[in-house]
Length: 180
Image (cartoon, rainbow, N blue to C red; front, side, top):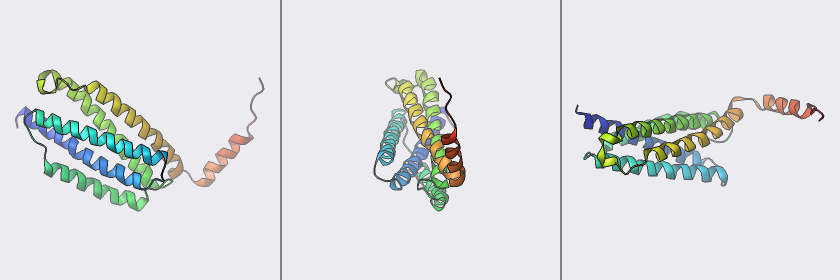
């Protein structure tokens, strides 16, 4: 397989994964109440769609085309994985939401390292000379960190019993602050 074919396959693999990410983000957003969380996930979905457009343009710029088969496979894989998450529950406090956010963090980190490697390939790919891969990486880091914050919060809600959390809060409230 010639190098450009391998590059095309690599880009198409990420395009397929991003299709699954969009579906997952939409599922999480549907389980949110109106407000900050729903807005966050809708905006994140929009940003991932923008990244998908960039990936598609990168593929076209190298004279290749995107793979509908791989994209469909990415969506199917995401839907299959989401069955377990839905069974676990995507609502706040449920294990499925925590696991879904963990999947998103991993996927966004994968996107970040995609942009890193494409920045390294850029000098040999003049078709991409106008792409700011460093800015794309910075945006991926910001997205990953924002989802990670929600993932850690979801872990507290999903993995610790209400009794354990209440006990710790009570302990904190009874601690005496040192006098200055």
